[in-house]
Length: 184
Length: 201
Image 1 (cartoon, chains in turn red, green):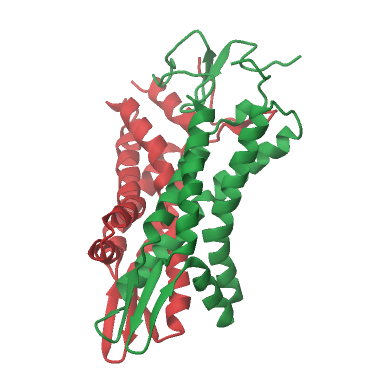
Image 2 (spheres, rainbow over the protein chains, first blue to last red; image 1 turned 180 degrees about the horizontal axis):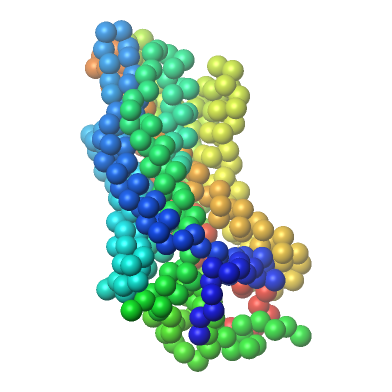
């Protein structure tokens, strides 16, 4: 039923969409997921930018943006930002770990169907790359007014974004299901 | 004479990319419900993109960000933000913001309406190019979220009591709703419908 999915990419002759994607080794994806998990907590909790005005300074983290949206009376925006920059990446990392770790050791993960479905849908809601560009634009906008400092958070965030992006790039449905059906 | 999945009675699972017989109702590989086309693709896409259009207008005419300082009180719409960058000589950033928050959502809705209409009349004209249009809006659509993140960062950074405070404007939820609705609309459109013969289901 399954031929080797890592062998070749197949594109639809009519619309040129990718029908079968080449996969990175599962161990590579597992490594990415672990690296992303390590970056996750510092990335969202360390200050991303610090804005100085006179003697006063204000630190901005991803979580403080959620707080101020909520404070301004827009809980729905707070929820949306939480979903796209915190929850979706977190779920993507955790589910990737739960899938790749057993598959890498040739064990069938329990609940594969649910994990796969979550991972399949959550990919579209990870918007870390857009957030990084938003930080850049805010920096340009505010640096015209007063002093702005980079925080450690932005370095962590760029790494988290890169790992999460590569995790998404390496995701191959065909390879995952082949590994599942081949496993014990 | 076409050899497509409908005439050959096959169904392609979008989840696990496995091609199986259309007689099966559940994909043998990943156990997802098996369909030849996305469920209610046309009506869902119409509904979601029309809803997005309704939010497009308030999102653009009402202020999205308020700036309060000792001397000034400003209500900024999305366009004001773009002009602000142009005035300060930041042409590149101004263009990025313009493209992400006004151009992309507008183009996305226009493309979706165009695709829906050409499926409706069963047009066979330039299907490959239409498919490329869909791919393009699918790829760049997420970037409209940029403005929401920028506002979030501005609001959390500029909090200096009576000296300067930035708060969210009431167009922001409309803008966010528009972005999410266009994302869902793009997701629910099935490009294979462009190739289907009219009248066949």
